[in-house]
Amino acid sequence: MECLVISAKKYKFEDEKTKEIKSGLHVQYLDPVMREDSAVQKGDLPLKVPALESLFDKLEVVPGFYELDFRQRPDSKGRPVLTLASARFVCGVSFNPST
Image (cartoon, rainbow, N blue to C red; front, side, top):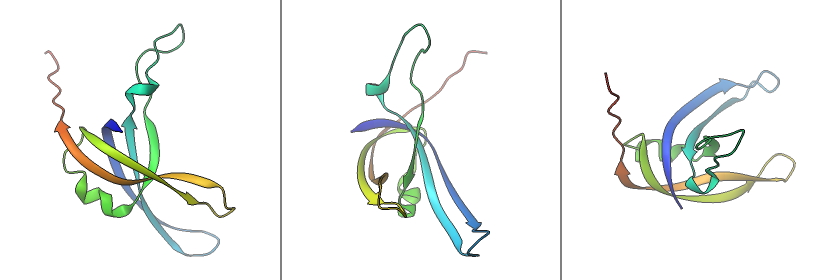
């Protein structure tokens, strides 16, 4: 599905209980299918999803439109977690605010 990727941020921290180093990547994007103009909302709300860390270098132009592919993986309790598995660049976005 084609979406507008608006941010990609790596994280790395030490788990306080296990002392294990945890790292990953979160990507925020806008999905035009989720657009809603109503009495309580206008426009697109950003969606945040975990992503494979290897995608960080593939997201060369942000913000930009990408063809995104999602997969599911189990969490610690076996519940499905949506994860961004691949991203193919479509085109960039330029903001020209008036001054």
